[in-house]
Length: 365
Image (cartoon, rainbow, N blue to C red; front, top):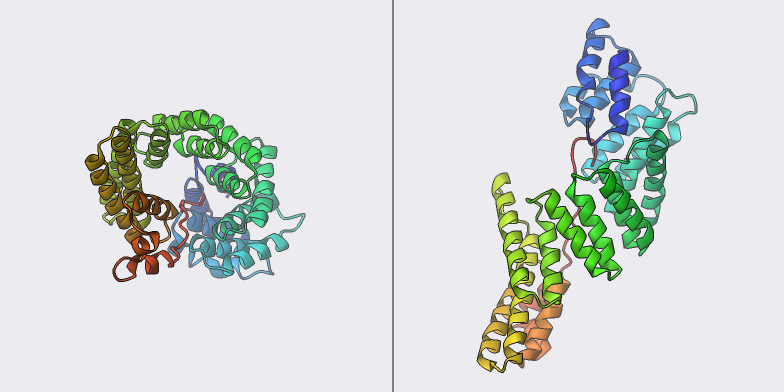
């Protein structure tokens, strides 16, 4: 059991590189050595390893043993994790808070239990857009990792940077993302997050560098292409913008085909809104050159694309804003344009789309 326990502890502090799977065979051997009657401690370690490794059904026979003793933090950590992975509120927060309240000063897994509960409760608070309490939890977990001399795991760094960004605390967000990008030089999303916070501070040259860096790290990463397309359009680089839009379209299409599902509506909307912005820029270029017919054709294509974007995602503010601009250039009244002949677009635009969050499995969320 000692080797299994060591690997379990190691997994807590190295969620990205290792996970809990290596601990499982050693803990299973400990259960066999106990003739099927493991201690509560071993039962908890193995049951939690199963759950965190994505094998919750294997944990079922062990959970009665885990819950058989006096109230302890272990069962609440497992319950909170499972609820958090499914974003079941308020169950996740209640269970993880109960776990933290039950961790005693003499608990042999005090640091590990505290770290995981703070991490997952903080991420769940991010999902609920409770940014200030999320920061409190995630900063505490971040500090614990630093004190251990290990790099905070990827989703901890990303969630904490996002929470600071959402509260306009750009300096701290940039510090976290920059440290993460430098400590994990092969992972594209950290470079992407650093680009985001640079762009929010209007440091567009830095933003472009880090978006391009994220692509250098992972050529299959679609998100930077849409950001680079927008920057290219703003800089008047239409050919480059078109290239990035096409790459985003192709990569998201490939990803959807891999999982055997259609692209999400918000992705379809991003593509259509990007195309609308592109054709708006083409139209404005034609107009500057005195080509009124070419401009009108391009504006018409922009209008079609932007309406399509709203059909996919009614709350797409980029599409709404650009559609009003295009309508004015075509001489259309904004109210008539948004209402359409049957009031469809206005009805759609008043429907709030669900907030999308990235979910990472395998115990790291």
